[in-house]
Image (cartoon, rainbow, N blue to C red; front, side, top):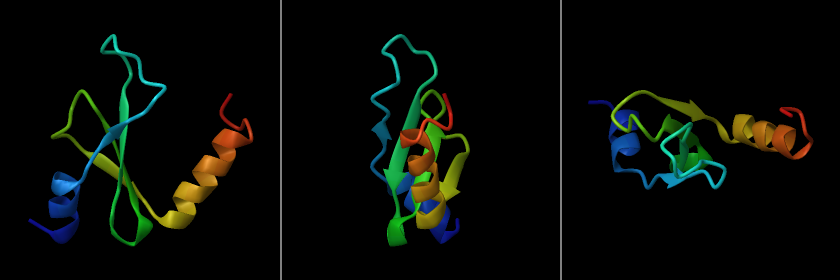
Length: 70
C-alpha cells in the first residue's frame, strides 16, 4: 500500500454541508499532508477518491464562491 492510500484511509473525512440527509449525492472532503485535499463519495468510502493540490483546491473554491458552477 502506498503512502497516499494509507493517508486517505486514515484521514478525517467531513461531509459537505450541502449534502442532504436522505442518502442522495453526498461528498466528503479530507485535508491531507501539504494542504492536499481528498474528495470522495460518502456512500462508497472504500471507493476511489480524488486528490487535489492546494493550488487546484483554491481555484475550485474561488470558482464556487464566484458562481462558476451555478
